[in-house]
Image (cartoon, rainbow, N blue to C red; front, top):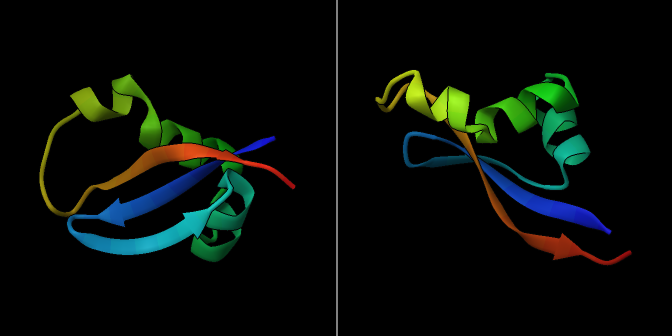
Length: 61
């Protein structure tokens, strides 16, 4: 099972799907998508110019 994510920049939805699908769409590494979701990244600051990843649940394939 894969986890389903949404990646936002401010209030704009940039990508949705698995981490790999989001990474491919945004042109970044899968690790970067998981970093956007991490607590360490969330502590770095706030603002509408930041990207954040939100986990929605599991995807069964």
